[in-house]
Length: 378
Ligand SMILES: *[C@@H]1O[C@H](CO)[C@@H](O)[C@H](O)[C@H]1NC(C)=O
Ligand SMILES: *[C@@H]1O[C@H](CO)[C@@H](O)[C@H](O)[C@H]1NC(C)=O
Ligand SMILES: *[C@@H]1O[C@H](CO)[C@@H](O)[C@H](O)[C@H]1NC(C)=O
Ligand SMILES: *[C@@H]1O[C@H](CO)[C@@H](O)[C@H](O)[C@H]1NC(C)=O
Ligand SMILES: CC(=O)N[C@H]1CO[C@H](CO)[C@@H](O)[C@@H]1O
Image (cartoon, rainbow, N blue to C red; front, side, top):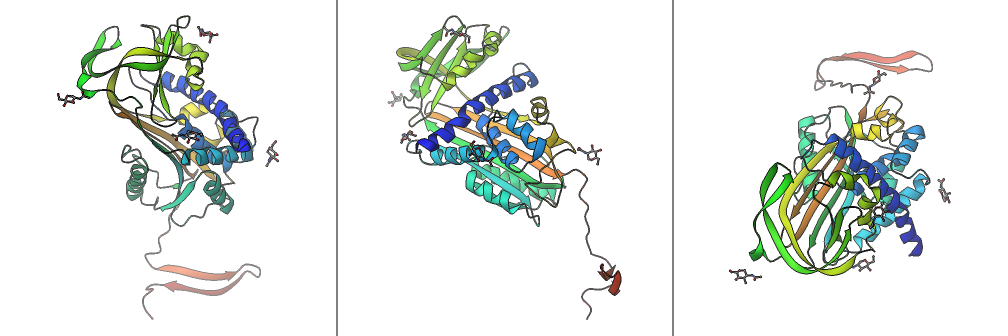
């Protein structure tokens, strides 16, 4: 047990660092006023799966960007195995589904070792998808994602390259009930100040009661914890008016939600909007800025995924949704990593007359030859 929690814990700090690095990048790439919402663990887990099929610099770049430079792949794989194991076993009052799917082009056989590793360490499922038929494949992928996220994410995949060989998919679905429900009768329309000049109307929920809170006056921020039934909480970091930028720049302030021991329980008048948002992000550029470059280039080495075909990552996408109301929270996130061939995939369809040769290459002898005009004729 001790070993297990240690293996799991080893990933939590690098994962938090990576979450933060992603936040900075997403913020820089997101239009002002737009929401940012993502599942860091979903992105870390998907990239770790990718890493387990990568070799050479392609792998070391992934490992170091994920913050795992000091670990080897075995340690990372074990960490995820324990992580998924622990999550599976604490579902008394909440629903938390985390898992991975490897969608493989019909007829393509990924490396046996990779499949075994994904099944063992990443609770991975293998699905065959007809990527040669992109329209159908898009529908099939979206159906799969919708089923894993309880229909919270339904249209994540917009298009797929006909050359797609494999898609690595991670999903996280969470549904938690507030330990202290909001009384819906107290919810009323109130102003929400998007910025100095923009105000919108929201349904503001109200509750007065005990919450863990920490007022960090030096850093112009208030941190409050809203517990769900079970082992999860929502942590809110509320910067003082006009101080968002400053708060975002102080590392420790953003880090505090991970270690909330400094909080104390106090009676609080809490007003919180009821809302539903969705955010999506393309991560290719961000990952390259964070040091994952070979995976997207001809230098890519995914020989752990397939010895036969030279694979390259063409797309990394993330989508996440969040709904908050008086009873609790529903959130889902998915990450997809699309892998294909660098060159376009050739297609040969023997649906017209063709010539055939059976050749012995050691002696360079034509053993048989002919022309097939009608395969149904006797
Ligand atoms: C990974 O690191 C651990 C701990 O240092 C070590 O015991 C193990 O042999 C290493 N595994 C590989 C495949 O290098
Ligand atoms: C909310 O209002 C309705 C009707 O006005 C009432 O029946 C209900 O008990 C109230 N709920 C709470 C939690 O006070
Ligand atoms: C919370 O986590 C602990 C340790 O991981 C576990 O023993 C406990 O059952 C969990 N509680 C609930 C309500 O799931
Ligand atoms: C404010 O942030 C700084 C830098 O992260 C930290 O050292 C300091 O303890 C914080 N102040 C308070 C009151 O927590
Ligand atoms: C997307 C990509 O990396 N395409 C590369 C495929 O390989 C040729 C050379 O074989 C490169 O020129 C392309 O850039």
